[in-house]
Image (cartoon, rainbow, N blue to C red; front, side, top):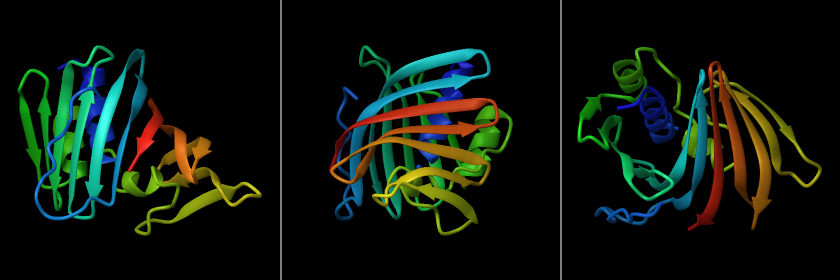
Length: 177
């Protein structure tokens, strides 16, 4: 799999389109979102769409190319994370940081993404935050990441920029459930 797509799939997945994800048994999801992403890793760039269903114990995510081709599918059950690349290569790990090390060659702290996408700091690490007068989160710094919130709709973030040394990820969220 292309280096940037491995980085992107791993990052987006653990922060944990055109194809629908099957709803797994086990209750309602805390949130579902659909949107678009753009990523830059060193001198490489990629873009596409994503579908993400999240609940406390599981995540299901699908990353697709701009033309709808599946790039990666990510499944998390508890702390166990599986990434299935578009070429069907499978990566399994006991936790997100181990998976990033296995796939990328270095550990990326990503525990807070499900909180960050909902415009709130993760409770498991210190953070610094800047808020607008209306109470919306503008900038969050946590675990080496800088998350900038560029827009809200119905009180939920619609545009985010996540910056980590050497990596920039932009999310445009089109649909929240």
